[in-house]
Structures are given as structure tokens and as C-alpha cells.
Amino acid sequence: MSDEMQMERPKTKVLVFKLGGDWDYNVTFQQTFQKQKIQTDDRPLDTLTTAIQNVVTRALNYFKLYEVLATFDSITFGDTDDGEGKFSIVLSIKPRENQYIWIKSSVSNISREIVLDKNNFDDVPAFLERNELNEAVNVLEEEIKKYALGERLQKELPLESESENDFDLSNQMDLSFNEDNLSDGEVISVDFTKESATVR
Image 1 (cartoon, helix red, strand yellow):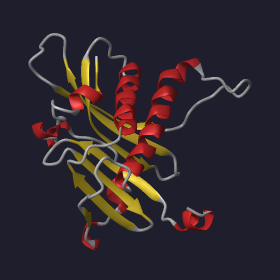
Image 2: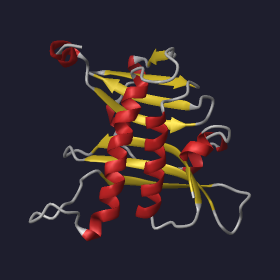
Image 3: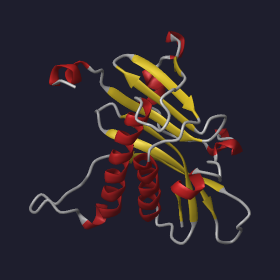
């Protein structure tokens, strides 16, 4: 692809990526001023599943959750009024006290700023875990874009544009999650995603 063609490609911004529900993979993204949604059972490339696994690992470190079983549910991207990038993430966690239940755990409005020492550009110790999570999220975001735009094991994806009445950027700026609004069906399925996106 020529440089000119690459420049003409619309910029893709991921808004929401969720595993599970009626479809295994759910991506809401924006190109220019059009918001689109992909819902599919198509299997992703290994690079996406690896990126999911890395985010779960880094998130558990950042949340100080150790020796637990966790699966990835969803991630939402957005910006504050001053343009600072933030994201919210939902994991399903199996507590050590009860191995028969999954508890949804969410953390909202995590800053995407990577804090480095101004003298040597090393990670600031107090921000090390968040920096590592942000680096993993950056990789995941790029892999989600690739998946949405066709880099996957199966080529065909049902692509639907949301109506203009549903298009409201202000809704995407609210990064909070309410666990009461999440259904049990949003936990990823055992046959595939538990193996590739579960971290103990």
C-alpha cells in the first residue's frame, strides 16, 4: 500500500471492546465521525489473544491482586475534557475462598499517562505497575483496531452503523462501570477465551 493510500485511510478510534454475551467479540469504534459496531464469533489472531492475556496480567499487578484466577470482560476508552486519555476495565475474578463463583471487578478512569523520571526517563517507581498496564493497553488497542479492520482468522464480519440518533460522543466520555448493569452472560466462554485470556 502506498503512503498516499495509507494517509487517506480514516483514523480508527476504539471505544469499547467486550468479550462474551450474544457474540464472542464485540467492538465499538469510530472512524472520522461515524461510530460502528462489530459483533462476531470469528476467532482472532494470536497477537490479539496474547495482548488480552498481557493486559489481564498487568491489571492484576496494578490492582494488587495475586494468586487469583481472572478473565477479561471489557475495556472502554475515552478522553477527559482536557484531552487526557483514560480507560476503564472489567475483569471477572474467581476468589480463592469460593472456586464456584466469578465476581466482576471494575476499575474506572485509569489515566493513560506513562510517568517517567525526567532525569533518566526510567519508570517512576510509584507508577511502575500503572506504566506497565498502560503499555499493555496500548498494544491491545492496536490489536483491537486490526481485528475490527479485518486482520483475523475469518474475513467476514457483520458490520452495522449505528443510527445518528444513537451517536452521542458525550456518552463515550463517561468511563464509569456499574456492576449491576452487567449480565452474567458477559463472562468469556470456557472453550476458547478461558485458555488464552485467563491468568492465574
